[in-house]
Image (tube, rainbow, N blue to C red):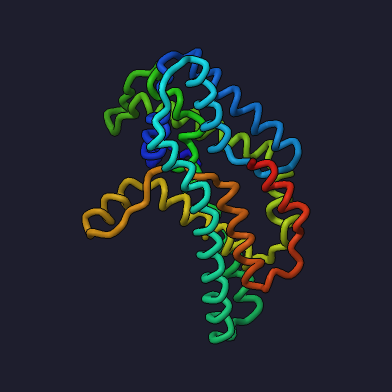
Length: 274
């Protein structure tokens, strides 16, 4: 999470910064506090709420209060990804499920070997997912503070320099990591077991699918490569990791013909997003 935030977190923060002008630390603190309280309340209810929606709503509220303009071009871009990202994750998870199950049937992998591969895959997918989460969602945590950063560039033993924004992202990455470690169990149980019971293999697919989507919307390097190749690129936007992961779970459930899905929990989650 921390590496993703420091190394690759600037793209989404730049887009979020265009949404509205917050030029004082007091304003940035107010916006961040409003978003944090919303996410805290929804987390208490064990609902995977979108931090992206919370921070965007808080920025819009501040802009209305301060009488400043809203960049509707950036707003439409961000809102569009809220719809597109869970659908894309569901499609990727759906396709990966059939690809992996086809491969396992063809190779006739021994149960012990399969268990070892699954454990390794979960660790790798989890690490990639953590990096992508930090890279994409650090904008939700620290994006509003970037125009008023109190830090100056810091040289580390003449090896590399941490910019003032990277120092903000380092603190934000640490905060995300602490929050995940201390306060995310209820939400994890909702996503991993209460919507649809995931096996180790399907859990790997969901995590990998979500990580891919978060990375697509966070990587400046990938965006530049796609533009260089003349291919359509993804906007650098802080997408909702919760919506993405739920989209992956739905993709798996659709691959299994929608059996055993807890639609009541799914409805509560959708209500929380609204």
